[in-house]
Length: 174
Figure (cartoon, helix red, strand yellow):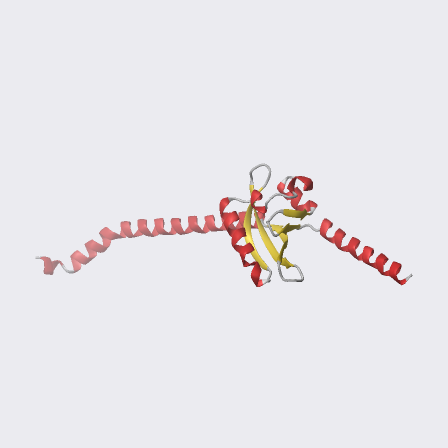
């Protein structure tokens, strides 16, 4: 009776955590020690425009650009630390459009200490990156306009400054 009660509680707990992961707005994925996806939730599949089944057993680098592949390899090589790490990355969706994401990844180890893989949570930050780019472009344009105005003012004032200087010091040039 006690064993059945423990099994029931375990099933309930597993179901609760499964629902949390499946219903999360963020993408959640597991990959094995060879960087193959062993689990992806529906959110990440929707974000990238794939079916869950199409993503399973694919190498994580399949969804990244070259810089992203280098970055993910770097972070995966940090697994010995056993610490979670967070980094920004660009992923390519099925339509070839790049999305900016924030990845928080934690390495997983077997009880004997050998590397098992990693669990990662992925958040789409494309909108934030777009706003950042717009702000930076506006600041850059503002700076360019400022320097253009200052240059024009100096150019316009240059003859006046030279004339005033020459008039004040004409006796030195005679």
